[in-house]
View 1: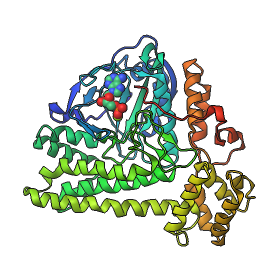
View 2: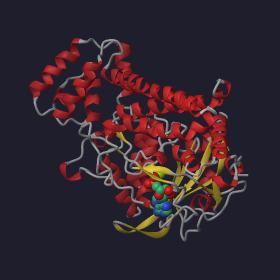
View 3: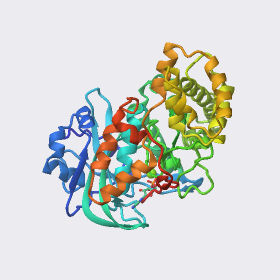
View 4: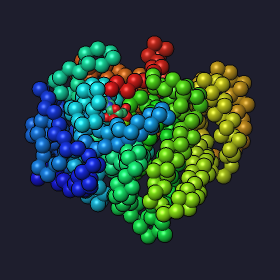
Amino acid sequence: MNISFDNTYARLPERFFKPQLPAKVPAPELIRVNRELAGELGIDAEWLESDEGLSVLAGNAIAEGSEPIAQAYAGHQFGHFVPQLGDGRAILLGEVVSGNGKRYDLQLKGSGRTAFSRAGDGKSALGPVIREYILSEAMAALGVPTTRALAAVATGETVYRQEGEVPGGVFTRVASSHVRVGTFQYFQSRGDVDAIRSLADFVIKRHYPEALQAEDPYLALLRNVVERQASLVAQWMSLGFIHGVMNTDNMAVSGETIDYGPCAFMEVFHPECVFSSIDRNARYAWGNQGNIAFWNLTRLAEALLPVIDEKPEDSSRKAEAVLNEFTDRFADQYVARFKSKLGSSEVVSKELIQETLQLLASQEVDFTLFFRHLTRSAGGASTAELEDLFKNRDTFGEWFSKWSAMDVSTEGLQAMQRANPILTPRNHRVEQAIQAAYRSDYSVFHRLVNALATPFVDDPANRDLEARPLPEEVVHQTFCGT
Ligand code: AMP
Ligand code: MG
């Protein structure tokens, strides 16, 4: 066997999924295999890059041991409940257990219609494939829990999207699971308590085995998800990351970032910043992500109510108490991350964090560059580049004298260097990689992926990737491209 599949989701009751073979594509071409990740999963990268491996990655062949299925789920999209979404353009090939004993899903995205496709074609344009590869691997390198990219292939097929006819692609996603808040909601909306219990047992076994020791394992499950999401969203915000489509179907109970549709790293800082073309009410703005995570977790708690306690009043009371832990958790994580970014865990106050962010917003400062150059200043470099980011030098000067009154210790400097990346996937660079890929030139993509693998390393060869876009290069909106 080239991939040692060990499938457990396919053993769950039949109503959890629909068996579905991927569609065949005419002329698959390998763009990239993530060799390192393949190695971690015990998959021979050379085989993946062979014609046989490419056939599997394109959906033209089924690897031995694979049991392809489309998973059922529901979800609140922009606050509106949709009782059936499901894998409309994704197929779970199966699960593998890595060298360190962790279990991962292997999923093809863009491999044709499924029982959940509704009006969609089940395919993916190459753009979103390139985008997800770059973004998810950049997040992993930044230390953020996330789904990963195992491979990207071009299909030789044309798909029809808003922008017209574009080349198609298939993306291979690796996730510690694909169970979403919306998976629980799927069964909740059908009144299927047995299924909720089976799913909760599955999630506990897979992600939170220690919850089995708790007095109330299902409540412990909820607490674990609350904690992971509080930490995840605080980390996103500390990096200027805007998920863009935090629907409940796009929130994984594992605590990994999932769904790289219209997400973006913010450049000029503003708490209300939104990139997604479909987020018209700024529901998923940078500064609203904590609130939304709480809203989504409340939906998860509601779905779990029937299994938490037999008595509805007790169930609600217990769930509410756990949910309310989110607020403090999130605030603590957020403050801790920004304290590191500003150079000290002891001296930096919440007020200074707030004041700094207000300054960045009013002066329209690039988020990543600000913290990057602040880190350099803390290390003794000239403040010239930092100062250059500001419109008004006096305003900057005032803030800077306050900040520099606090002496950054060696540990503080190290914390800054770990918290403040030099490279993030800038929107115009991602866009350039996509446009080049549409011309079958993958060199821009490869260079970006390679550079973003070490986002904290100061490599003079990457100065252009670090820089702000030229005015004509600025990307104002992102699209799901589905
Ligand atoms: P997403 O925007 O990825 O969160 O997708 C929301 C829902 O739409 C999911 O059920 C997807 O499977 C489905 N979907 C998105 N694009 C397509 C497509 N091209 N064909 C079929 N279903 C799709
Ligand atoms: Mg999704």
